[in-house]
Image 1 (cartoon, rainbow, N blue to C red):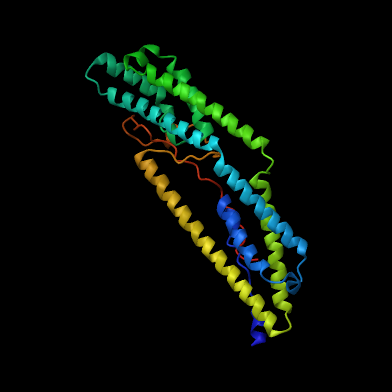
Image 2: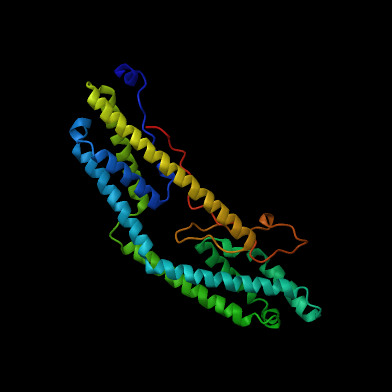
Length: 304
């Protein structure tokens, strides 16, 4: 039976963990470390420093994630962003409805603003920085048509939008400074180190399994590998379910309004006319670019 193990060497599935969001990534490594550290390092012929380095990086990831979740500025940012979205939806809605007004002065004013504001329809779904930029552009265009803005009664709403946007930008700056002043490194710097340590740990485990001379050790190592692969499988499933939920939520928000933005999302380009749905020259408020995905997939390797 021992020859079967040698002829069919086991592999360790890394779960393609490089694709995971920060919290899931840290938890994946935490669970794998618990399994590996339960086996004496001497049996694996593994340097103690390697396990120490791996654990240090895992702990850093946990602390980074805790700090990001706890930031008071993050909650305030989200609150202000929701206010911006509501104001924008109201402005675009008034323009759309008043284009149908039976009063020529009102419908004409609405048509003028529709043309001026059309490039901004849907910016509620843009990433934070992009939306701030587009609101600044909208303000410039609005100030070119003060009469039309007044006729539609949008002056107080627009002024409130500018005030809320300024408050949002101040919070954004404070959040950025808070991050800069943090003693913790950026997760992007730590995650590759954690993955590298894990890959090296896997090599030692596979080597120990391959060169084990007694059945007791072979059983110990094969059991460890099987359990590690189960963790990888479980986390891959969690990741896929999470991605499916995000896609469903994004589709729902695109169809029914809302925003899928998060602090740290990269800004998107200004919406272009080619991305808009044909509606006889009209466009519903809230339509536009869909929220950008949180990250790009790392093709990685499934097996170590």
